[in-house]
Image 1 (spheres, helix red, strand yellow):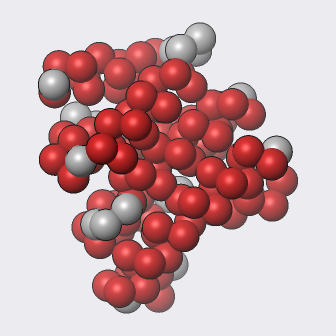
Image 2 (cartoon, rainbow, N blue to C red; image 1 turned 45 degrees about the vertical axis):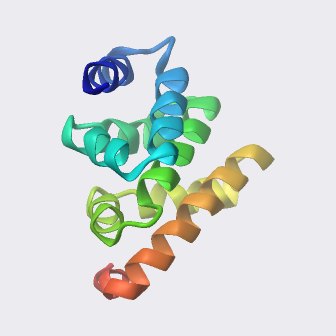
Length: 126
């Protein structure tokens, strides 16, 4: 399974045509198990997802937010890593300025981040 994850991360990094699909696939995998979420983080998906959230097309930003939301779910450690990677500002921007779908995805991600980070006190640092 980790070979498939690594392939999606490679597509995410090299795009540009399949980056939204790669982000969605990673989000689906992250949403299915904690072990897969950990595997996704361990192969270096976080920074490419944050970059996609900042610089991608509208659809790419939606899917990056989707993936980050699933990665943040149920993990204080992953949520802190997402915050440390700089995802908060682009998520808030997407929540304010994005399409309806983008706002939903950004809201989902921010909800998971706030739940986990507030428990750990991490949000107070940012």
